[in-house]
Amino acid sequence: MKAIEQLQRLERIDYQIYNQCTGTPDDFARSLGVSRRQLYVELDYMKTLGLEIEYSRICETFRYGNNKKLKIFCSVQIVSDSMARNIMGGYSFNNYFVMRNYMH
Image (cartoon, rainbow, N blue to C red):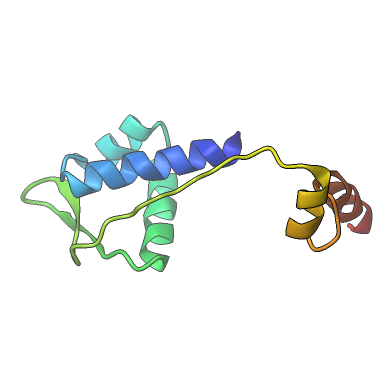
């Protein structure tokens, strides 16, 4: 569930930045339930995706500088073991985690 929570947080960050309603960095971090440092980690990650994020002291909000917006797609499906082998290149999903943990 951690991955889904992270995606949901990215969606909330994107929504607030796109609508220019983040408030100050401290307010923004507090509204997301993260530290100010973690907020900047998330923003840096978004910048690596190609988003330009800037902060306006006059408006007290973060905003996008390049008219781009983040779009997140997430899909969860239940698949048969044979389909999982095709997806995982011969390993079933359960065996992948067993082998991965065994190898480390």
